[in-house]
Amino acid sequence: MSLTAVTPTTAPAATTAPAARTATRREYLMCPPTHFDVVYAINPWMDPAVPVDRDLARRQWTELRDTYLRLGHTVHLAEPVPGLVDMVFAANCALVVDSQVYGARFQVPVRQPEAPAYRSWFATAGFGAVDPPEYVNEGEGDFAVVGDLVLAGTGFRTDPAAHGEAQEFLGRPVVSLRLTDPRFYHLDTALFVLDDDNVAYYPPAFSTGSRRVLARLFPDAILATEADALVLGLNSVSDGANVVVAQAATDLVAQLAARGYRPVPVDLSELARAGGGAKCCTQEIRR
Ligand code: ARG
Image (cartoon, rainbow, N blue to C red):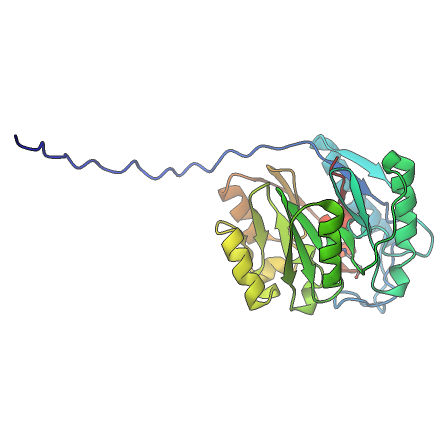
């Protein structure tokens, strides 16, 4: 009996159509930039010598909020407190997973009063009393939730001991990542979550070991250019399909579109004067 020759077949043509992405409705907490200002310098983006255009900041922030509403998301507002010039950066106030609120403890004294102000918002919103954490951590500035994992930054602000504290409190695995470039002082200036399985980041912002961890966890990640990182392109907010991203991050916008995401460009240049972009202004509430 002779074996039938196997006719070689050509492999299916590589598909060029990007994957279909699915948006899910999100719940955000924001704080209007009523008292926004740059009066101290706690990161390399801030220069108190250059006056802030608060009306412009307000218009840009309002456009960001309206963008979320147009995308079908819910936006809650915290009451701005006079004198707390960075309170617009709501991402720093907590990390909320499974309706559990892990509160912030700010590193710098000038921002410390924001923590109780936001804790009282959560109490009023029905989350119960939020205990102050033991260790310094700047909320979603340094924590990012990807599916079941929590990525956690350290190096400039958040104490690595807070990573362990967050893991104990939330019951989610926390992966520590070390930031090494002071321009990218919070994790959310160097990395953002695209969906439950993937992220975008700027590799040189991380230590060698952390880059290896990221490459292992996210072999398909979108890698950003330095130019895009420097316009806070990685301070983006994705709902799984729509990605609210700094309009100046042109290469990133193109990469997102090529991967099947829908870039939604915004201009937050006036808030960037304090070192913050879209994500910094946005705390995600995960029920
Ligand atoms: N001026 C603020 C600070 O240095 C900006 C915080 C930006 N927020 C963020 N999630 N990266 O603390």
